[in-house]
Image 1 (cartoon, rainbow, N blue to C red):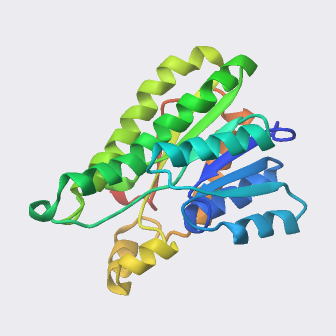
Image 2 (cartoon, rainbow, N blue to C red):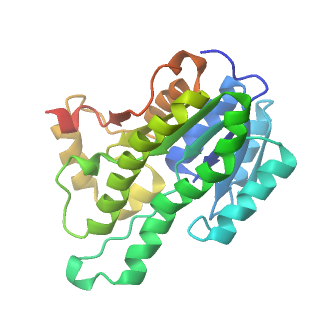
Length: 248
């Protein structure tokens, strides 16, 4: 994979888990990193700098327009551009439909869908001016896999991410910008481990074609490829990374 030198990648949700793994892999490839997360991402920044990379983090609530605007200002002021945008920040709240209210629905859509739209709106003009850009959104295999109860707002948001990816790819292709998504399966990230039992992880593992629990690093290589020059003719796609679960 070529072309990373001198380029800037913005990764949201990079304090831990999948976002952190993606940020570390892109730094290894040679990108300068800007990280946005509701939580401190000092660990990720330190790990990048310890290997000679360049990175900074912004604590921001991407579920609010003000938080998105803060991240955009910091990226523009400190690095001057965004060549690769990875929309990984996500919110999963389990609510049975009978207990779901509009505020919870809107909060999940704001973090999982609206933040991606706002960041694309901010960074796409610069990508278009330079004739190059890579956008990678993070969806979920729950769009295809029958979810359990309480997933209505989350699955709706991730389905929107898939549709947003496909439609945006059509509009941005003529400007040299690709738009793709990955759809992880159940991954042993801190958030997933906090919300699932070991029994559930084991059931999912045994249902996969590749019978190993997914790790955050399993997502990072795919994103690095989609961000690279080698993926110049891949756009509008959603790559399901779940050990073959939803294809069986």
